[in-house]
Length: 305
Length: 295
Image 1: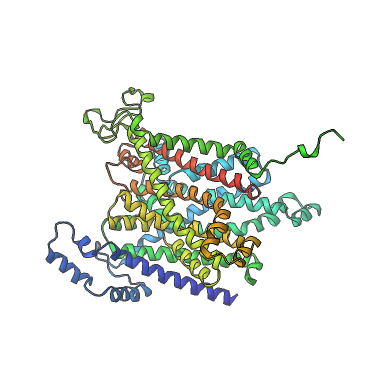
Image 2: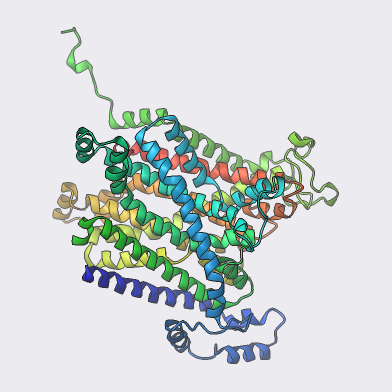
């Protein structure tokens, strides 16, 4: 187990390092960042001044080393727009995105797992068809369009929830549904497929033959085994949701890291964008690591391999 | 027993069996016909569009569709600049289909090369490819795509290239596993024993056997690319006006959300129908070509 953990941690560090290299070089791929920052009306002197001010006149490798040595201790420099430390800015916005992501994954699990189990118990039944419908619609529904439709129905016409903002928990309802529904199809399909396979297994037949209560067989014996891959997928989906919350946060004006990313991109606030790409990547890597550890804990067979 | 000669009973060939499965598969049929219809409409858009999708007529703004009290002159109404909505919708299908197709080709080439190489050579090559896939998966797609489009400036070409270079991960993952599965098959080992070159083994032994899986991933990634383009264009960092991208049409209609909801409903339904049909077709291809993998 310690070797397994050490190997995975080393891999995670290597991935984070590579992403930092990519997210840093992205800025220079598109040409001269000083020109982009100066704007269209800038003179050559303005551009030179910006170049000196932000240190763009140094070799790229030196700039990267300076940036990386700061990033390792959480210092991502200053935001061009707010003139405050990038880390403070992100730290103030990230909790909102985390709350949204966690609420979204809970919504997805609460919808997908019972539906997937029910569909697997009675394949081709009405409930199975309904589950298939929910998943097919979820896969084809563009997130931003679904958000607008929900706003029209529930915020404008029915007035149940506020249209946009971050002030109360009621502001999180629609974004949670949108983000959670996005993750539902994958989780449901995996739950259904896993349950179908497990329910055919010999130990389930044995458990039934012993005369155990069907509910106990279903939840204690079957779901526990079918849930192993679902745990991994849920962690991965949570990572995707945090990175993908940018669309939802922009539409609902939810003041999280996603909205900060969108605004920073539009303001050419490169240090914030670079830091956010790196931070979201690290969160994703940590989540997959957590999923692997959870899987190893749930399924002792993995630990050996 | 009965008088039937055993030679008269001929088992259906695999191709016949597959055709029969295809014709009985509802998802395959519905998805295929719907996608076929959308492709056809996109191809003949110049012939059937009632108006020029770019011509503005400010005296004809926000006309309603014919089923909401409008006239047949503008069957789906007009937008905020008085442009015919049906014509823009038809031309928009061309943008979505182009994005889907070109992105799938670029990402398919990258992902298949990486995946087949990893699966065939194994060892160190496999380790390196797996690492590249992990790095790619850990990068937030929407955030990176938005940032790159903002840096290079939004245009159809930039969006296609960015998505093509981002969405290859599934190709690599699936092609790697598929290649690994046939890596130790007898026919592959005999090809090696005969002294076939790697290129030849990949082209004549591996590719035909992973083609079905490749088609399924192509459909999935086409749908993925179309959704992402619409989202990028909706956020203003994708295809730029006056091009009639469906995502852009929804963004332009957003300001009139409360008064003229048809402006976002119509392109939204079009987008939904396109992605739905591609997904159905992809699932259908998987079921029809590999019925044993159905769950």
